[in-house]
Amino acid sequence: MAKIITIANQKGGVGKSTLAINLALAFRDQLNVVLVDTDLQGSLYHIRDEFPSLPVIGLDKLTDIQQLDFDLVVVDTPPYLSSRLPELFIYSDFILVPTKAGFFDVMAIRSTLALIKEAQHKAPRIKAGIVLNMIKPRAGITQEVSVLLESLGTPLLQTRIHDRVSIARSFMTGGVLNGHDARAKTEIMSLTEEIVDQIMAG
Image (cartoon, rainbow, N blue to C red; front, side):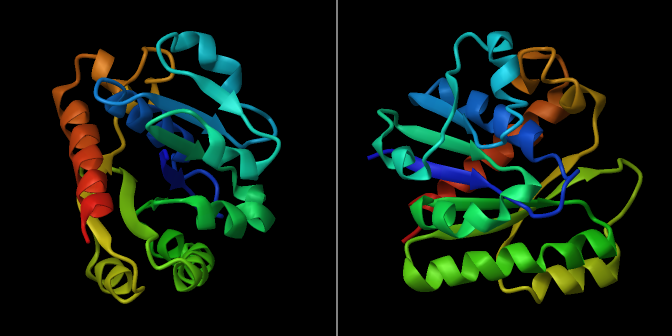
């Protein structure tokens, strides 16, 4: 049965789709991967021709996700999918919650984390992690934000993804790993490895 990684945050503008496409591409060399776009607008589905070696599909029924014949399913979710997130979380092996490093951004993930904890109560196998995303290169993480993140009860991953032009443009360049930005590649690969470690942990 496929492993399922779901990227979710009920707040928009935190880079979920960009992380989804780049994580799927990072896993592609080792695994048979499919990217599932649950956005009704189909933003990823409509650019699937830019990534000919990566299947990108939409799903009408979330129950079908477990029947996909792949090693790994990476699921991108839009902010307005809130009512269906509990069902999707139950199917997931790992849930990644991207957030910007601002105080209000971090506060806004609490509702998503609450849904994750409900799913974990029903299915303890579900792992989850928060990743700081779209960090301004010269901006540090404030002490207040660090303390708040540590108090939320969901692990904060060590990898930090910075706000880089190469990442923002990766939809048009075939993905970060296909580009020339070594730092961006290192960050995406580090995140990939950290997720694998989380999934494989007992």
